[in-house]
Length: 258
Image (cartoon, rainbow, N blue to C red; front, side):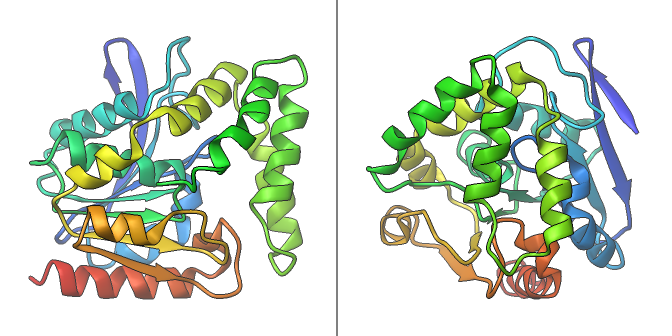
């Protein structure tokens, strides 16, 4: 299904019934299918909406700045158009950043948020090391740079090899202007301010390698609950969906009892 916002087509899938409604937001250079196991699991008991962010999947890809705030604004707009009240915003990777920014900038919208292996509150040493990669995304060999980064940084040796190959290939097809601008947006938003502004229940779920400063996160946002899956890399919602689904379900039951 699609809705048109100011001339830009935004794609989404809407299924299931029951509350609280869940809105799934994919990561950088991905699409709504990266939450397929969660959509299939939770649609039995919840209304579930999975979006393709602008620039991604089946949504339009206009030439513009792809900031975390602009993505969050689109998600809020879609919720209003679909009459989704007090959703739980669940985002993978960049999608979790968007969920956090949404909670900070639109505090009345979400009932809770979940970030799934999202790059929030980097160690101070990390962003400078990513600047050369950002520059490469703006250059002629952007696709090779992106695929090398994805292969080297986002998987474990134990991850399914065929799935890894499919993900690397699919992510590498994203338009250059979306790749570069969205990655710049991930690095450029005010992490600490967004974390401190979050007032809703928040599950920050990580994979095998945690790159966020969890102590600082808890200091700035005391209600955050953190968790970690076992034996899977960045795409753990696909690799070990049974672990991710169980923790999501428990968080919903505890944080938002019906």
